[in-house]
Image (cartoon, one colour):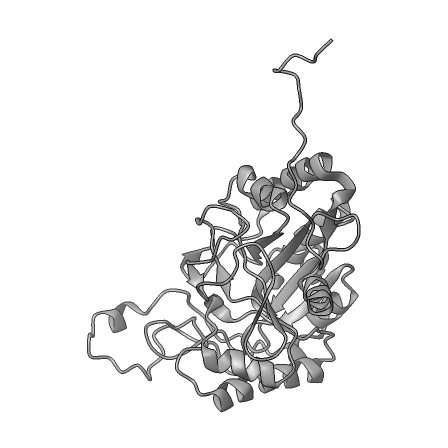
Length: 323
């Protein structure tokens, strides 16, 4: 007897697994979280400074509920922004110089990682997590005050990146050779600098709107014309690029289409929900964590062991090895 159509469960139509996927896996899931720094990563912690009760604690709870989940934490070594909206007075001056910072900034060094050992200790001890640099100060003079890389030369980009790594090393923070530029913007000079410095991967595109398909290209924030759902090489060496294609405002169906197409479901979040006059749509608050909890439960039931839950560096290394 045939099963009534209303009760039948259609099996996912998987794409042919790519060579870079581990045996038995048909698609990958990864999570990256931007703007991790001392001011906002400790939001909500108790009076004793227990980070497990703050913003990072929500990630830890999500991983407790989903032991297969891994995360790439994008850490700003010396966060400077004190406001995430332009100064009202400056906005009224059309002639204002691009060399002027349009948003309030914290004093240099106030949020340097090597001055916040409790956060460094938490990050080093976090299971199934890895750390990558996310700019140096997350700031730049001019109207695009949070877009750190704009018109710098390759040498200037390289110096910026090396300063970030020096702070990580001074803080004794463990990290991997990946890079997520602030506001996803990675001009050619930065790509060349990362190539020359031996980085393994770069995430410089976010696209939440382009329809999912095997050959879809990113065309929204950051780098354009790179694959929406697959890793690919950029630059002249083996620098692997991975596009962010899902966040809190994305429907379940978008995630399923990425996974059915055999791609990387790259979920993006920011460690804080609101600060400096700005609200992050993908801030990792309780509501977003609940949404991700439901999503992870659903795709685990739907795809089972066919999913590869990975960090960005794991995907990049297998792609470099098998491409």
